[in-house]
Every structure is written in structure tokens, then in C-alpha cells.
Image 1 (cartoon, one colour):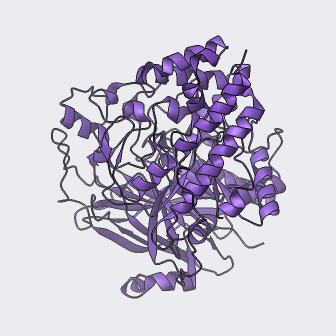
Image 2 (cartoon, rainbow, N blue to C red; image 1 turned 120 degrees about the vertical axis):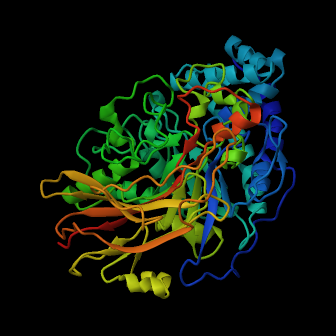
Length: 629
């Protein structure tokens, strides 16, 4: 069983082109002359989670695009998708991280390229034949390979560590050269990274690993394959070793906690015991940011956890029944460890007990696209993978067409983007903003959101230079309020609509806190909204903004809502003895979903269970408060 040694050598030679090493570069551009502003003055938009044909699953799903294609697309250039469709972003991104899976890097392409007569293993031979039959066969082969990997039943030849290491090194070197070549400081930032696909048993504990450094340091290590690991401790050790070896810096971003079956944000350590201060400190140091929204659903909260929050169910349908592999039903008792708001509350509980908060993280959105295209506009959505790129049938296809995934493709979100308040468009400035948590995520629209906390903010500040005042006299999103100031904290909240998008419905502050007994609580406050003359709080609830969506045309009107909303809000229920956090959620007026655009374009008749309109949103990183001790 297995591949002949000569075949392995041939495969190694064949991986370089897709990896994007057709042109050599002397190194990345010099960013030393790019001056940083005193405070962040402009939000930068990007994607920290994107896959190309180098990812084992993406290639199997039909992705034939390279990291270079992905970078060109992010910069606003036109590319041809894997299914032959011309694709372009109306507005380029400011930065991109291509995060191909470390596990099996390039393996699917290697099998596809292998001469059939050289393959001895019957299962591998069958998979290769399926991939050469076209998109449907390729999807089936890849789905079977992924299931075999999750169950530990991959053929021995595909587990050859020596061949895998050589292939990984070849592709990684090519990837570094490409990403370094596209770094254009001040204009476009390409960062180096990979995905650590931690998924033993099918529970999603994936992390995107992002380096601050250029290729001269990053090439000193290879991407880390999780093999049989269950928890991220090995990754953290890898990160520590990288920093010690190179003097560089690296962080990790957990994603799709909604598919972790409660394991992403546990109250315990891997050994089952209560989380210690040391373990909490270790996690917080390595994972400063979490991906709150993407194509595989939204992880902010769940109606089961937040029954009094009428907007808590966004992007949860279809994603709250089984884990990622669809092999382990998700029980309501697992939700608490799977959603971000509850994790923030759990962090307060652990901090109250140990003095350290493991879940004091910021939030971003990103795509997790496996098409190599960071395209999440509802009218320009290229789907999760090439098997569901634009077509008349994709809405009603399965999430992985031809295979039982337990989910339908219409349940995919056209989401999301990462918004970063950086002091310059450089690798260092963007990475530093992620590390200090001055970031937020949206489901796609480019809303500009500011959030500051302090002890003496007043409404009159909004008439002056409130941004610099916010930095001078308070802390931005991601920060911690100093204790012992007396009085109640106040917050400056500002949201501007996407210039090319929908008006805003409302701005909310979501508060979480722990009481003296260590029990956590939450409350959502509407703090600013459109048409306040006619929309009054009734019993603590705000009337709906209205609805202008015409689903027969996939249009809406900006005749309702507001172009901007701003306020200074003071917590009326503040208790100085309680640990607390505050974050902002901004809601747009209702707009058509990508499925509605497909419905109109392809003249579809769709079931009533398929949503054709939604309220897209932004989530900021929190601001924390801890009592003085």
C-alpha cells in the first residue's frame, strides 16, 4: 500500500505552481518609513481567514486559485473564479491573511496530480478517480476524505510524515515569497498565517495563526499540523517556541465556536479541573481576538442563552444542531461554551474566582471562504466553496452538494469582515491593533463604529473632538476601565452607515456582569436609534424600524433609518463591586439576503423557511470593568 518514492518526488515538484512561486522576490517592501498616527484615525477593512487551492478541502471542493489570485482579488483586481466566473470587489480590502490549512497542505492536489498507475491503495485510487470526474465527484471524494480524517481512518500512505513535511515546506516557502511580494505598506497589507485545524471528533476548535513578521522570520518554522490533539495547548507551545527562536510575534484567533459543542469556551482545564489563573493567563496571552461571525454561522449569541434578546438568533439556524462534522448532536447544555457573549460572561466568573480572565478577547468577522475570494456582499457572494459559487440551484443545494452535511446552503451567511483601528496600514500596526483588541466585526457592511469608555464623558463632548478626548480621558474598544474613579462609567458610541449600504436602525450596548455569588447576568440596552421623535421605548422595548425590502426585486429603500447615530450613554445600573463588560451592537435596517438576489436573478421559487431579508450588524470588542481590590 502507498505511493512509490518516485511519485512522491513528482508530487513535490507539482505543488509549487499553485502555491504562487512562479516569480521570486528579494523580500517584502520596507515599511520603516510609514509613519504611525498618534491615535488610530481610519478603520482598515480586511479578512483574516481565507483558503486557496493549497487547502486540502478547498482543492477537493474545486478551488483552483492560488494565494496570488486571492491577494489580487483582495486588492481589487478582476480574477476568474474556479468555476469560470469573472469576479471583482467593488471596494478593495486594506489587508488580507491567507490561512490555508496546515494539515495536509497541498495533499489533495498531490493526489489529483499523481499518475493513476502509481497509486496502490484502492481507496486513494478511488478518490483520485472521483476528483477527475468533475465537480460532483471531487466534492464527494473530498467529503469522504475529511470524514476519514475525522474518524482516524485515512490510508497509511496519506499519513506519511516525511512526504508530508517535504510537501509542506515546498508550499510554505512559495507561500511566504508570494505574500511578502504583495505587501505594499501604507496601501495594502498582506500578512503571513495559516489555519490550525483542531477538530478531533468533529468538534470545531480551529484557530487562525497570524504572524506580525516578514518571511525572514516566519520561514524558520513550518505551519503546525494538529494531528491527534484535542485542545490548543500544543499550538500555544508552538507559538512560544516561534517567538523564542525568532524574536518575532504571533497570535491565534479561534473561529466558529458555534460548532464546537461547548468546548471552545470551557470553564475547566483539559484535565477536567477548574480553570486556574495560570491556564487562564496562558490562553488570554495567545488568543486576544475571536472570530464572531463568518459564513458558517454567527457566534454572538443564541436564543436559548439570551431569551430576552430579540436579535440573538441571527445566523444560528442550521448551525446549532450538530458539530462541524455532523457526527455529534449539539445539546442546549453545550451552547454556553459555544457562543461569544456567554464566553465573555464566563470570563468574568473565572476572573472573579482566580483574578485572571481567560476570555477577555476582542472580536472580528472574517469570511472562511474556500473559493480564495473574500466576497461577502449579498449581491456579489461567491459562496463557501466552488461547489456553491453562483448558480440557479446553489440556494437549495446541501452545504456540501451531494453529501449529507446536515445543513442547506441557504443557511450560509454572506459574512463577514474584520475592522481594525490601526495607526497605519502596515503589518506591525494591524497586528498590534488585533493584540490590543481595538477591532470589531461586521457581517459584511462597512459601518464605521467607535466605542470609548470613561468616567467623565458628557453629551457635550460630541460637539468637539470627541475621538481624541476618548483616547485621552478614557479607553477605546478592547480596553479596561480603571477602577476606583467613583460615579458611573459613561460611554461614547458612534456609528456611521456603510457609504454604499443601508441606513442604521439602532445602536445597542450589551452588558454582562457577575453578582456577589459569582452568577453571571446580561442585559441589552437600546442607546441610540433612528426616528426618535416617533419611536419611543415602550416597556423598555423599542418599536421595529420598519421594512422597505421588496423581495420580488431584491431591493430596499433608505427612506427609513439613519445615516449616523451617536450618543454618550451612562450605565444606569452600575455597581462598582461587580465585574462587568460592555460591547456595542449596531443594526442596519432590513435588507435582502444573498438568497433573495439569487431568487430574482435565477427566477427561483423558494420555500417559506428560507429567509429573504435580514438586519446586518456590527459587533465591537468589549470594554471591561473590574472592581478595585
